[in-house]
Length: 182
Image (cartoon, rainbow, N blue to C red; front, side, top):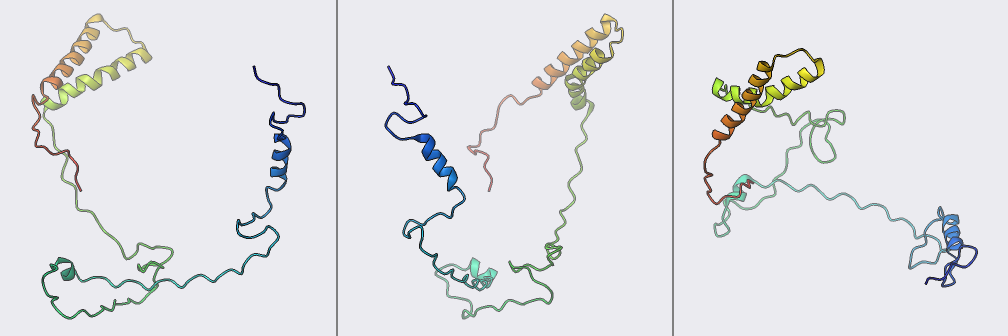
């Protein structure tokens, strides 16, 4: 058996939840006090932001291919990057704020042409996908159909399905690869 809450909406342990909630809402927009500083103390002066780190010079491609045991090809000199004329973005790329990718344009190669399937490929798919679409149109339009047309459509669907199932490979070549590519 549970005790009934005391009148006034209080908690059985003596805490008035409604009063505590009202106090929280009354001080909702007040600035939060930091744990190590009293609520009335002044805030410490804000520190200016640190200057940005200098950009890292690019590594020559030959340095990336060198083995640890090989001596350096030439004495290490910091490469001075060439600063092209024109506006620069904060991250060092060229272009303008309006068109940040003006300097970085890449055109993909032409894709290979789509393979042309034979009628042995398209006819089963037409039966599996076209017959249900045909029946949706028949249900919506409601034309008078002879039973022979319905029978031919159902047989076309079944024949297309059976043909696609029979054309599946009978076994998988398991080469031990899980398919992940990096």
